[in-house]
Image (tube, rainbow, N blue to C red; front, side, top):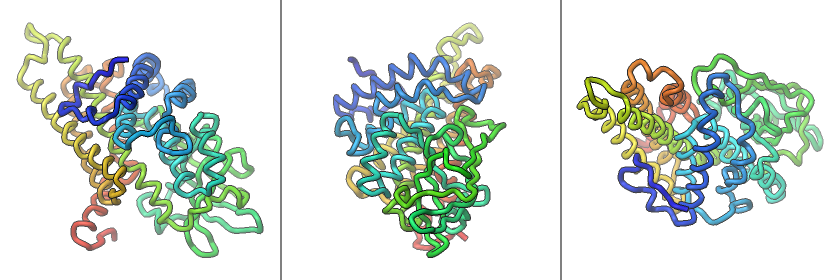
Length: 392
């Protein structure tokens, strides 16, 4: 098996990976190029999720690498970042599915579940036998979830009764379980619950009309007197600080996905610049086209340096909220610039799906906003710089 470096990895950060990690990345790349890339534009246009990819991605370790209970081999956070990059390079929607399944759902159980809950649920999630969703955002509570969460949980003997609503829940229309975060009416603290989606009183409705990440099946969820046993309460989730542990783990991975989405647009632009003829030669031979490519590569290279270091800090145990927040705010901004430049290079063809840049251009808008908006991540870093909180 021969490992090929991405041409967009201009400074060779992939050389930090072990041979085993490179082999696993090659297997993923080969599967994505052969089985996923040919179908993603059609799925995006129809706003349909390709369920046939769930099990093959599980076999490739996409939902198991992060957790000691399920990891097929010892691996680094940098490797896991490159996995997110490879997924997003081909399709940000499939990357989002894997990120929810692995990072948010398995991450919630790994960070906040008991040993028994981890042993029961993580293998099922890793195998793809159970598909999960993550229910934190609400119709009236997004960035202010720490204070503004309105979904309630009331203890009733050995059960909990949940009431409320959630919005923008990825995988929400077809998940088997959803991690629901709710405020305990007794102590006003946020707690987490593993909620089977066939529970009476639980309903999920697909959000229609999206212009970004159309393949992701986002749902509005309503909880009406949903009864959950105490055994499905995440035993180590006792306040929003515990919820934040999960978000801290996933925010850096979203930064990697932002880089991957930019790389996907850049790869398409480079290929097009070599084949599109204008004024008697390939457009790649024109100065202004090279300028667009060089600026995009500069953004990608700077962003890669940042996310690689943040992932190394995660392995070292030194990463803090402000480190992942700076990565999220910087890489998504540079992604937004880069996909626009790459789309520009295509001229009118850049708005047509078949040229494989329009989807990256549109999907950038969702990546820019989810897992912490630009403004919230800026304020997290600003608080670290100045020692002053400026959230309100």
